[in-house]
Image 1 (cartoon, one colour):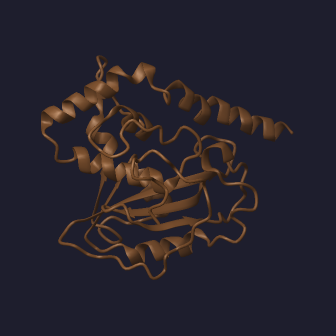
Image 2: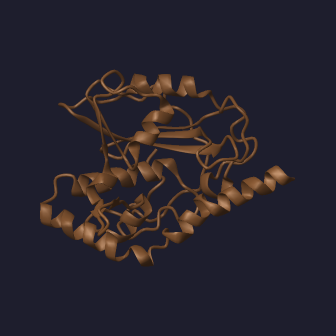
Length: 243
């Protein structure tokens, strides 16, 4: 199931229901076994952090999509956040519960697994995975490009910003989150960024960080993304609550 991204890395398939590959064989190479996990959520409440897992994708370092599964939350869904998730009313009705999906996911993870992702700790927490039990370690690719500011704080960049402004991997320069987020596509590009820069020379990483920072003010996903995920999202919540 690698059809989400074409050979150029730019063409992304329409969001669609995909099911667990229950018989997918997981090849276990010498330690560690790298994979990317990406979780998409729907809104479970009126606050920005009120989220419930609605889709889980697992991709190995060869970009094989081992899982891309919709999840039916147990609680109330306040909003499907369709402009972001592509999930609509009814899409999750026949999906398995999170516990079943996580159980299948854990079955597919070798004990020497290193989970890669953008802000990956959030995904790990949402899935309830346990370090040292369900996986060996994790690596947040956002940490590769964090920049120290004049006030002593560190700032990081979104996966969308990184893919738009970094180079040296298939699909670099693509706007992968210009519309609906595709969990498999996000996981694939997280792996590409990781493989490109994780062991790159320090000077390469320095230039990448510099480029990301200098282009931040021109980033398509800067204020627009914050507006969508912040004020506009909350505004929509208040609209629904008022109605």
